[in-house]
Length: 186
Image 1 (cartoon, one colour):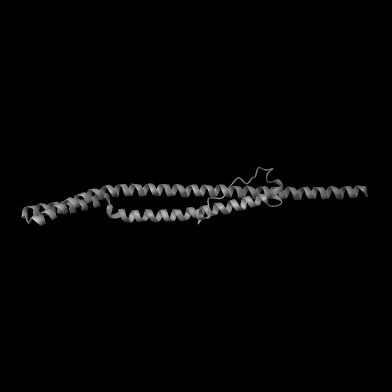
Image 2 (cartoon, rainbow, N blue to C red):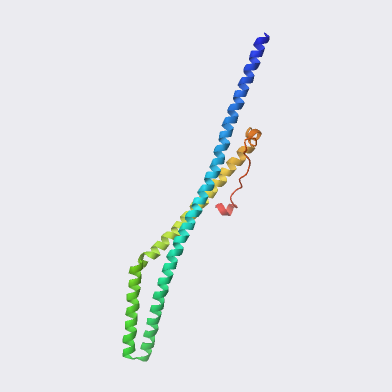
C-alpha cells in the first residue's frame, strides 16, 4: 500500500511538473512573440519615417529646381512686360518692336525651360509627392497605432497570471512605453 501511495504521489508530482513545464514553455514563447511584435512595429515606424524623409527630400529637390526656373522665367517676363508698358506709354514703334522681341524671347525661354527641365510634369510630380506624404503619414499613424497595440498586449501579458510569476525571471519587463499622445497616433 505504501508503494502504491508513493507511486501515485510520484505520478501526481510528475504530472504537475509536466503541466508547469508546458505552461512555462508556452508562456515564455507567448511573451517572446509579443516582445518581437513590439520590436517589429518599431521597425515599421522607422521605415515609415525614412520613407517620409526620402519623399520630403524629393519634394525639396523638386521645389528647388522649380523655384530656380520659375525665378528665371519670372524675371524675364517681368522685364519684357515692363518694357512693353514703357513702350506702350511712349507710343514709340521701335520701343514696341523691342518690347515685342523681349516678350517673344521670354515666351520662347519659358517654353525652352519647360521642355528642357520637364517642368510640364513638375507640378503633377509635386502633387504626387504631396500625395505620397499624406499616404506615408497615414501609414505612419497606423504603424504607431499598431505599435501601441503591441505594447499594450506585451505589457498586459507580463502582468497577467501566470506570466507575472515567471516573466521577470526570464527577463521580460515592461520596458516599452506607448508612442506619444492620442493626437500623435490618430
